[in-house]
Length: 342
Ligand code: UD1
Image 1 (spheres, rainbow, N blue to C red):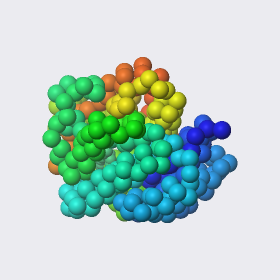
Image 2 (cartoon, rainbow, N blue to C red):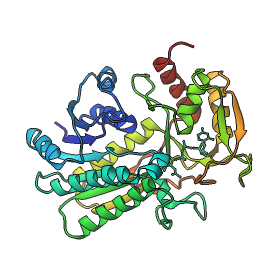
Image 3 (cartoon, protein in one colour):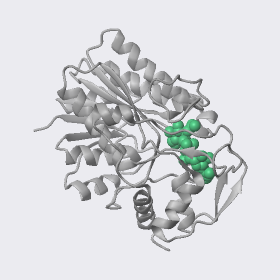
Image 4 (cartoon, helix red, strand yellow):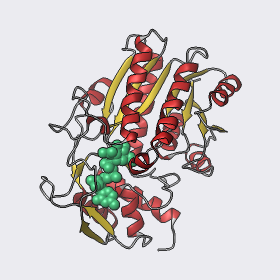
């Protein structure tokens, strides 16, 4: 019997894919989610893939009493993966306190309760946004942290510091901090995927909704950057590859006694793709055209960033495997499932 893991934000985009991989690896999963940016039907999708329905608690992790009750009623939780956070960069500028409250209170509550309930390790979702505009690419974990350009980004930096300070104080827990680059795609079964509320802010959901005819055209935010085709470069990583890294990280914390108490890993492919190259990949993979135009730059965008994933490759034994065309095909199958008209 494998350990029991609490996944906060487990019905969300990355959370749900991670629950699938945890269950496939034999772990028992308890989800807590307040359904603020996901819906309960995600549990059906998870069950359709794994044949197992995770325990689900609807609740808010910013309330410590809710978390305490969950831990009392579900004894024996050994690890936590914390996805419960707000993540829209623009919204965080408008509503900074929402971001500080959600993202920081949740983390503090979880850390606070871990020793009392014998929870050994926490995997934390951080972001490459902590590097700001890199001086060099690819960027590794030793690169300097740059001042955050949004409250969202700031919550990631502060969260990393909170974890480090708590562990340095002698707290009997371990943590693996994962700095994601740009997660995209959907489960190949098309049973789960990304479900943005309203107008998508991120590239791939906007792109697939445009291909599906829900949006008129995609705007490429700038073609005058210092990159080969002028559009911004990112390291797009398949969400299932990303989910698998969490399972490896959890196993490492729980089963290995001689690892450091805090470890940080970049999760990316090591390959940068421009916005225009990603559109080409989608068109090549699906045969569907994406109407698009070049527009002005988006304020706050980084010109180019991609990962040096060597540490994750060598220490975790994890490698991003899914080719980007495959990822785009999966993103499209999911889009067709949620908007089957076209
Ligand atoms: C942003 C955050 C990242 C966060 C992620 C999650 C920063 C610098 N980055 O990533 O930390 O984890 O959101 O939501 O804060 N684009 C278009 N047209 C569109 C949409 C996007 O051209 O309609 C371009 C952008 O200019 C960018 C690329 O596509 O070059 C990716 O954008 P997006 O998907 O929003 O992710 P990031 O901004 O990289």
